[in-house]
Length: 189
Image (cartoon, rainbow, N blue to C red; front, side, top):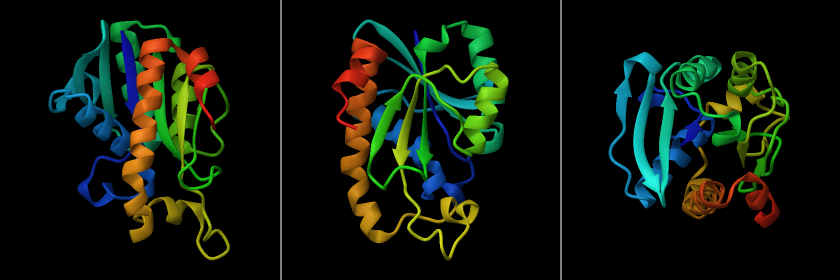
């Protein structure tokens, strides 16, 4: 069993913002792999879609706790299903990567990302797989990061998103099929 957790904020006004890139990646993956519609699971405080990739049971998860409390939902899922953290993948936006760049890693700090910081706090470790989706911040001189991430993608960025989301989907499929180490070795990022 694998848990794929996209980070984002649940309200409609946040849907197309940069900070919801994790939600959009999970939605895109679900659509590309014919997963059923997401349903709200109260005990996990998350929307979940369950399907299979090959013989692997996969749960796609979108916490409904808001970004900065993502760890509450993730911890509830881990406590209930008891998978190893190696079978968990967090997907989230990253201002430290240029827009369009993706990077899969075995572990690491939060990099100032409050959703990831909350995951680390609830897991008690930085050692869990994550897929970082670059959003850059070319406006850092004129806009604080907290404001930048809650803004929508530009029109040009929106046009580029399908290709980026396809690349993220292929990376997640590789993770599910071949494992983290092989996926990191196959990654060109």
